[in-house]
Length: 89
Image: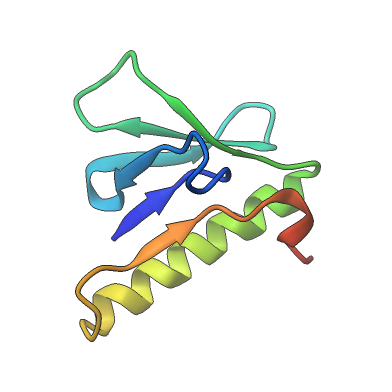
């Protein structure tokens, strides 16, 4: 499964989910990615106005990944981090 940054196609980052660490940064509102083996590299994938929105987005990512790995119906799944206004709590 591929993950895209919040910007989508405009100046986006695109990573394979199974080859990176996705985490909520210390401010608890920013989601970053660190490619495996690149200890000094991290990329901002999304920024949210509240901790709850960042947490909800991580749950969405995990759900899509689990759905993808349990149902190999599609050859390639893509998760784009939603914009702040697209996340409902």
